[in-house]
Image (cartoon, rainbow, N blue to C red; front, side):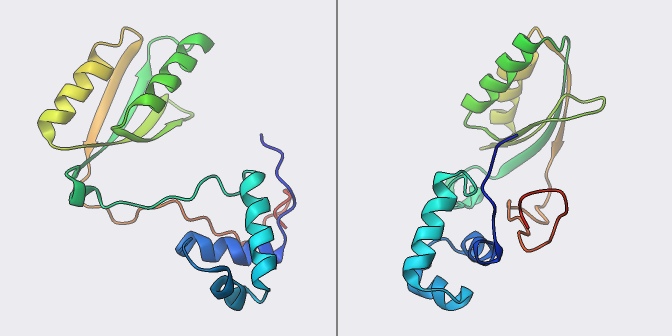
Length: 166
């Protein structure tokens, strides 16, 4: 587990705001969180440098750029040797269709979110990535009919005991 710095109340207020809109000026953020623009800039720089803020991205509407199909895929590997797990993880990181991939507990080894242009593209993807993989025991695909909620915003204001985010 990563060793993150202590995140105080001001950091939390800044983090809540930049999760909503990370293009806000330091002046605007400062007004919202009750700090000077220079303090906001220093805090943001530290949060980025230490990995508390993993990245600053723009979320693109998949439909607008021709990737309207989303699938939730459950994957079970044949063997769970460390080298095979690492190879599968690395291969998923390289695939542009794989938006998210999680190694999970239980009967399933991985759950992933996959986006494609259409059903034919997904069929080609699943053949190339799953069917032709000799270490893949099984996979199940679920077509997303409607995204009810998306995103990765974290409620950083919620107090949790036993960690350094107090």
